[in-house]
Image 1: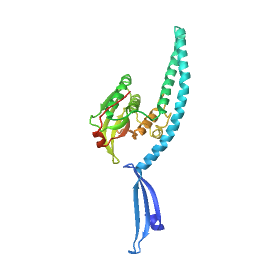
Image 2: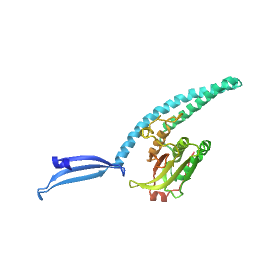
Image 3: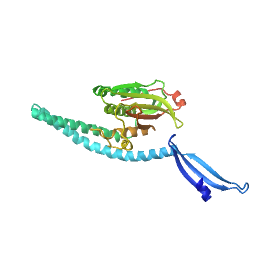
Image 4: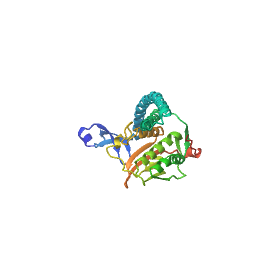
Length: 298
């Protein structure tokens, strides 16, 4: 306003409201009204939150598609020699496995082959094309199945898993298999970062944020939480602070959620531990009325 009073011209600004997460395009112009003799300022405010989200989504999709094609090609080239190495280790163990002095070396080779196999699978998942079996279904069964898959790692780590998954949640448009991968990855991370005796809490609820209906799923662990300097980088491919981690887990999670037009937020819980919040857009009531909840996790 002060600028317009000084210039008697026009100005435009883009402003972001951190509290609501909404962004506005403001355009203002100085107008001299001859009839009244009093100058006025015309201000037009246009919300561009959704437009900016779509633009950012397109940019990320283009970048991740290009990187996905590269890493999928690398994974394909690595898989064949990895299979050969595994076969040679099997042959050596079958021929010389009775020699105790060779066992430590065979164990190391087996461990490294497993690690590379896991990395190859993660690379394939990262580079997987974004086509799948889309259904209108409830999130609860998918989350419950992911928790069941994480029970054994939880038992081995002496970490308890608790859940609060209401039956009456809105339906979402989803690829159940891909969404299962999201929740399993997040819960496994929570288990791995929690000390023995800790509890991982998983909840789901219907919420409304920024004028839109969502199904919000939260995973709260008992670990040390996120370091502030790590938060800007956690979704970058190959960024990992965990020994033996590939650094692709959260990158894959973010990519799958973008396919679902969802969001993921990372924070530290006030009572301690890390908290991962996943938002999935809820289907409108008109769509829900004609849909049947179903889950097809394979």
